[in-house]
Image (tube, rainbow, N blue to C red; front, side, top):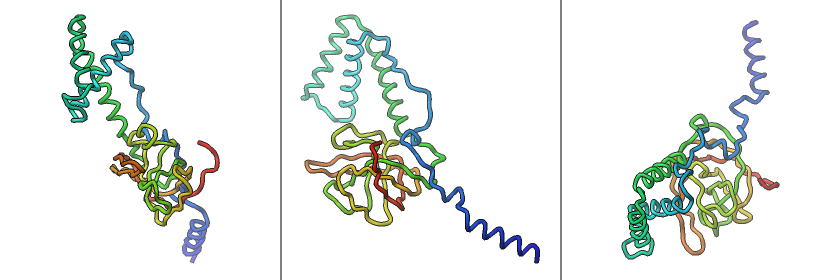
Length: 222
């Protein structure tokens, strides 16, 4: 009988008190990025004009590799001119290009890294709601982004600074980039979504998905 009474009291206390798992962890955008040593530009000690030229040549080679430019494009011809200039000035440019390219590859790798211990957590995070269809008013899916203009008017944030939100009920968006608090369960999941706007569309990647259960307006600027 004593043991039964203890069990009943314990159950009542448990029911009446919120557990750690029921309390959302409040996140900022930096919390979505693993803590790593800052990267140093390998060309930081190179004269600034040469640094710019190496950066441009590295970009041109990347665009050629990905098929973004062809031999008919101005950038392709710029690349040939830069190589000729380096050779005529006896600049050993290939090692510099290789070092800078490795630096850019590491930035791209880090942009996709996630914080594994967030997987499955109940969280609350502020951001700007960007509907995938920017003309939509009632939405059940949107991207949560850290800044106004992201993906449309400004460069696309890295994947680990984008959250794909799926709501259990539709949200009435008052305007593009509504400032909101989202509460829900976050999971590590890579997504590629097309954001459709008035004059075209853009594919964007996110490293997190948030199963949203609550949307609240965020009244102050963040």
